[in-house]
Length: 412
Image 1 (tube, rainbow, N blue to C red):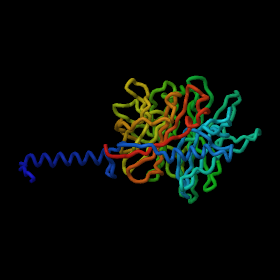
Image 2 (cartoon, rainbow, N blue to C red; image 1 turned 135 degrees about the vertical axis):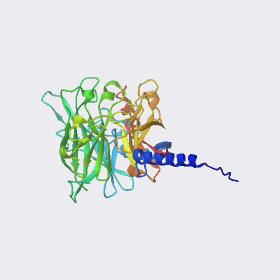
Image 3 (spheres, rainbow, N blue to C red; image 1 turned 135 degrees about the horizontal axis):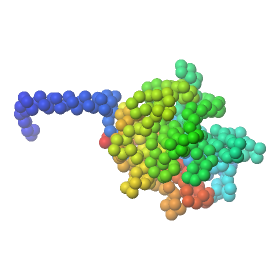
Image 4 (cartoon, rainbow, N blue to C red; image 1 turned 180 degrees about the vertical axis):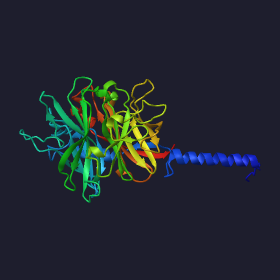
């Protein structure tokens, strides 16, 4: 039996005003296009996707293709295939039991082509060098000082070759880095670039610089864009970060730029978020707003959009002791520029068997929204490596291959 309660006229007016204020606040802050809080409510290992990469890597029918890599990001192609980008990539043979040959061939980057049915089919690399070994798909060089410079691919999107063009191409964001002394063992940040691949043959058609960092600035203050990119209503939002976390192992500042569809390879089309507006000057960019938790993201976070809500996932850059933890956390926003609310706990990505004893760690969580099976799930990939023992990833190839989780999403 329902109990009815009489509400007096004054209370009724106050209630109506309160509801109206709440509705207006929701329209202003939470976007009328269906935005609401979004978080991860559960997860399980996606063994099928993890096994597919293991199957391909263990296949010795060719010995000039991928046996392991990191930096794993993906983009769905118009014909249903998926292009996976990989940074440092090991090639050659894998022995029974999961051990690589000694001193295997490797390249600074490659790409994998997956069929519409979900089977990895081939590896894209550059033309072989004089030694007959494959080269990087996105070539590097050796400078006049004898130091190496290379490119790591990050996120990619499919867009028109130019605004209004009927031809579609793949744009791959690249991080240009150069050899450096510790703590820059993974390279000193130099520039953000964009490579163009033709469709459907995926031939490299060119590389365009879009944001070259100031060589006089401290490396930790330099911002590279492309850890994630999301297309929305005629724009591509390109997320980036500075290198503070690379220098000291803590958090990085997160940034965002946007580019009109068809303009990613044209630096003149880029606009950078200043905290209040969009500017054509990259030096005017300001970090994204994380409210009371400014120490929030690593430099390899991921952003996906679901309805009107934006979801950012990152390794926890501010654990209980003030240092990064092995857990993934999430933040949500109703806009790509924030404010970002959180953190919400996601979980600790599991390591391969023997990984903890070997000192392996998980990093670079990346959302692969094209593999969602419905409105409330997300495929999350992550990389594994052993930083304290360079040979460990050759004794066990599982220690340097992507792994995957299937996340369940729900309201905050």
